Image 1 (cartoon, rainbow, N blue to C red):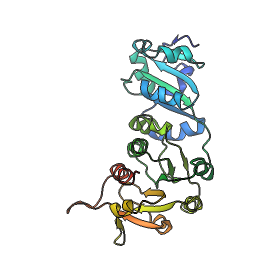
Image 2: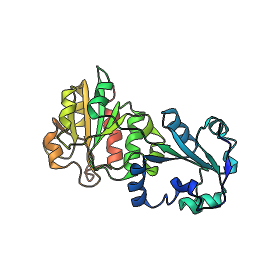
Image 3: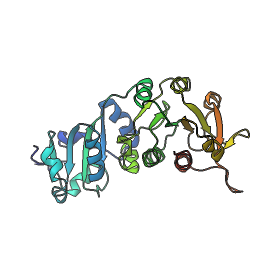
Image 4: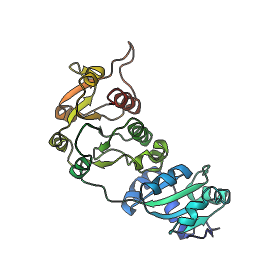
Length: 271
């Protein structure tokens, strides 16, 4: 059981995990290297803990001690009580949700291990190539969780799903949907075929079949591949796909944001 410790100095080294949270480049480099991520807000902290991620520490203001009492009582990591003003000094922004937790990352599974763990039978996997916007990636994970996608695979240059903004937008879905990275891109897409998946690329190609046609064929094991914001899938990824699929749209609109496109595709292909 952790007893909250009041901290009054923004330079206190015990708060080092929470410094400069608004410096995107710094945090993108630092968090994976140090094996941590930041969970923001009561719901997200609870979901991270429920998913089995170990807590390194927690930072919260006095008014959140009540709502988070059970978490504080169960914590084996230090809990720091700070004023809202000090929290803003440390993090660089107003922490309006009142609570932050520094969580320890766990090792990612290999692609082969993740796919094998899904088991036999009908399965759907989402594959994101070079999605660098944290909000879009977080929204993609949230849609995957809501619409029954079994796992998410990311190309090497995709954003970090555990970056604070992605976690927040996903509402903690990044903790409930199994995911890992494809190290050798796009060659590792062959691992999907080895596990019986058809790889369908969402794109605007002239030879792409409408999404509803793909959905009507009821593929047993389907991997839906979506590209980066703006440019979409790379030529190499398109060549590696088994089929090309497009979302039919009204005149004057040629594409959707990757987060919106993923939600449409996940909904259309659900069982």
